[in-house]
Length: 129
Image 1 (cartoon, rainbow, N blue to C red):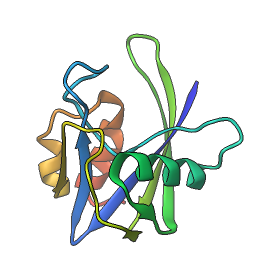
Image 2 (cartoon, helix red, strand yellow):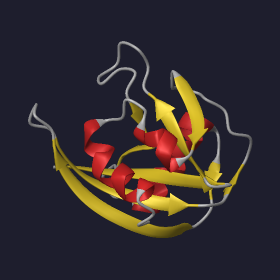
Image 3 (tube, one colour):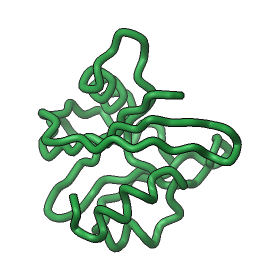
Image 4 (tube, one colour):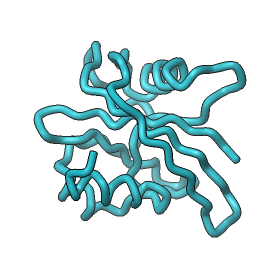
């Protein structure tokens, strides 16, 4: 099982989502920024590294974490740490994605999201998180 850390960045009632590059695995699907946790790395360290690379930002503290496991039909298994973060430093720049957007939880539901993120998206839209 692959351990993944992603950031649920929230600002003014909106959530940051990123669209994977066309031609990549799960191309043009929407996801939260983050990535695989490397050996010896903490969740916070992983998020700092990934978001610096992907968006040129430094994260503030993690407010809370929701952990969900998901098995894809192709056999991929992920244990995802959804980390809620409200503060970040730096000018947000898109370094690797097709597109980056701030959306409301309801707008998020209308996007073509990665399948494994639907359980957390539904909780966000229902106001449970």
